[in-house]
Length: 460
Figure 1 (tube, helix red, strand yellow):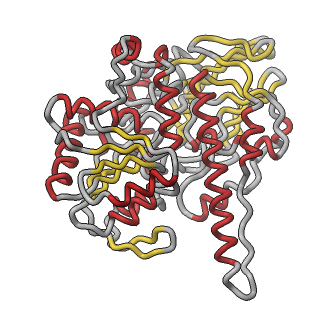
Figure 2 (tube, helix red, strand yellow):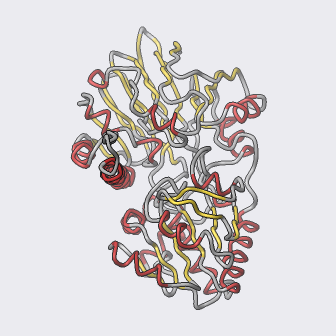
Figure 3 (tube, helix red, strand yellow):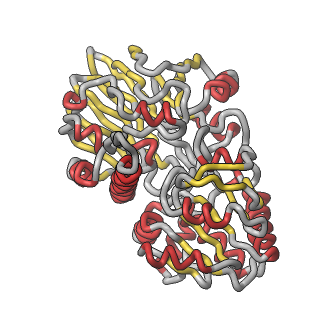
């Protein structure tokens, strides 16, 4: 069994691993790099393998850094089967189509800018377009609920709930070859236990090697109770100052969790009753609909509420704004609005327009409730930059910035260690984390631990 790393290289984005066993080539995820210009440029590079040679792709979950290069993989020759849980298939379709749309919009914007210059500056083509994303959806095949599925003769995959987002999975690949059995456990992204919407993560039992994410391997999150208190206090303070709250939020899971907590806060008199709540993201709106339709992948209490007609994602005065015209109307609201918009790292999407109009207002607030990769606009705001560029405009950062990390969908250090200790395995490969973070986590894990380089290949 051979394992190659094509999305590691000491980064928290761009997950992509290749397993070659029993005559088959199995890709685990195929995500984009997110962050600075160098990372974005890496997305256009060679995969490190021939896409046409891949027999199947197992998608652990639908975040862009795990599924975002699938349309490019198809564009460059992949003709295999994509295997995932039912919610992951639906959510990945949303994510890939949204990514393609944003890329095409960026290209059109650059072409308009280029037309003003003499000589004209060529605009970079999008990584892929809507047609590529739609074609990628056609390659989704078997839908797997948590359990074991035969991938091919002598190869099985066991899906367990990763507790990260709706439908997310850790996957154990088991293969019989050369008279023996080999097992590789792929963690995917491991969830933060004790969250209200999802079940806690479940680790595979045993393996010869574990490929494990390490995003928060150097620190634990604040307790949810403390983070929720900070969240309510932030929204209350912004309302008292007479401003708006802008929340860059991931469309998948984070938006639904925020809606749940806002409803809870209003009903328990912990939030002002006159807050106007906007979900200004077509993708987040669709993701909320998918979540409502997927009770079997939610925590039992949430599933029960949905079946009884008590929508946990519908706080008072909630408004979904799908159309661009409805989004623009929010700009007329100067006070009392809670605007949840994508993207979560503020790398694109409608949140840019809301930041453009509210970031320079001292009475307003920006509430960061998720991980922000280095180089992204959200990270620059969190790091305290006083001026940022948004849609080509220089914007002063005068709004109050609130960073609340307890909402993270990723396990913290203690939970990562506990998850790994559950798996009986002599070897761990740490990926999906910054180098210094990996080193701190490695010292606390059982057995041998390695940090593979981009393109490295090992025999298991």
